[in-house]
Image (cartoon, rainbow over all chains, first blue to last red; front, side, top):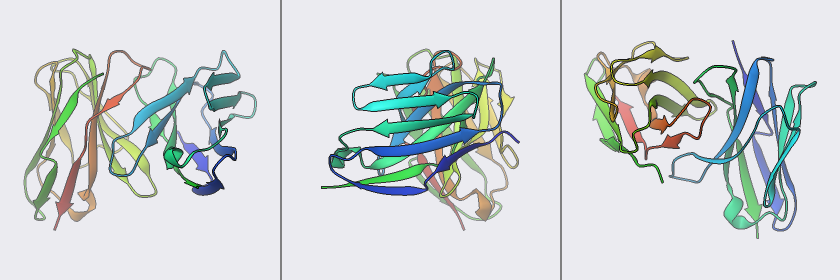
Length: 112
Length: 112
């Protein structure tokens, strides 16, 4: 079964620190990797996404690092803010597919 | 911003009951999805659709039927609800495959 794994399950950092969220996958046909975030009592929303033609995607304080050979990616949040506290989902989509396969999420808490 | 609405927002039913969850998107998106969200599992795809009359089976389809009556409307049907179907259900839509998915506010279902 296609799987996307995330670690850690929960993470607490102090304001201003860099939070690192990890994701790995098994299927080499995956070619689209979005990260969604979800605030308490809200719906998931797209944060940032990457395709394997790149090994890095940056959007402000949020950066995805992608290692195709090891089938791993990570989301780095620099200068973390309390407003970044949310659950972050890594997802993956096989080539030519409509499907998104989500990981189980990392709950990030940023302490002021 | 894409608009996806869901109804009802909360639903309580008994085991064996009949439930219909409704989703409407007003952005002429072709793709629509039904997910369930449970602690520890992230988002799991139940059914998805490309256009009116089209239906594709997702990863956890057992016990669920779906119907796409128009480009805007996508319904999820539980004909014999079971307590294992107690969950938070999200509908989403996207313009193309491997594109941003816009989520509705969710329906919280409790099966007693």
